[in-house]
Amino acid sequence: MTDEQKPQVSVISPISPAFDRVKLLLFQPFDFGKWMLIGFCAWLAVLGRGGFNFNVPLKWKRGLRSADPQVEHIVEFVKDNLPLIIPIVCIIVLAGIVIWVVLLWLSSRGNFMFLDCVACNKAEVKQPWRRFRAQANSLFIFRLVLQLVGPIALLLVVALPLALLWALTRCIEIRAISVVMWLIGSLIFFIFLIALVLVAKFTIDFAVPIMYCTTQSCLAAWRRLWALLTANPGKFALYILFQIVIHMAAGTLLVALACVTCCIAGCIMAIPYIGVVFILPVLVFTRSYSLYYIRQYGPEFDVFSSVAAQSNQ
Image (cartoon, rainbow, N blue to C red; front, top):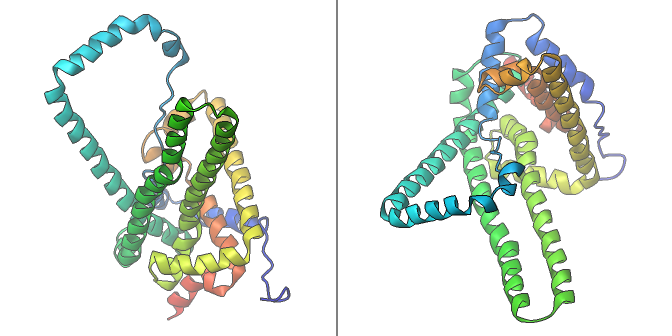
């Protein structure tokens, strides 16, 4: 593709139409029932994206040594009841895996439902749930494999060699070499981790709209997206940087809102489904922004013109 043929792509130009989409979808006119239905689709779309906080309180850390007798009692209890504890732990782990898989499947369905609401300016649940079943199942399988294979590959490619290196340095005095190898291994680890995050990000932001327009599978959509990414690496890098800015601005706005309302807004946002409904304008804006961004690369990536063409048929 020559320079004259390359599309003019900007990370700034999608902002205005994304704001207009928020106003059109949620405020022109304001319809409480429509807002709640779109919020339900958005809630399904974001299921499972959050995480748990595994941080140990500092005060607990400082008091850990003083609690050694209690720790010993716990260890003794575990040893004495190991035949009972192991099945319980296995059941809990299995239940957690099942819940995670179900949430991932629902989220894959929800991504197409929410996209359909934004693209068509409507609030429907049953119709997009049935219509995009095949595409959603393809997305689910892709995300499931990515989230299973990714950590395993990360473990085999980076974590395992680093563990072997650590064991080697415990036996042989090669401090300088070990430091260099640790730095290289850590760099590879973070690059691999960032790559997994970017694949997940681009899947939702761009592969899903391509699947929506073309009714293709997730792998077929990724082949088209990969050609686009490799042809425009700088533009998509700028997109990621601007996405960080957008999320920082949105996060600052929500924190300020929670502070102004004496944490009332923060408590509301912590409630499942209700919290998503509360921040729905932010979610509609971010979804609309990615749609308006990718359509700059050509009409085949324009979700809105695809919807218009289908309605005229």
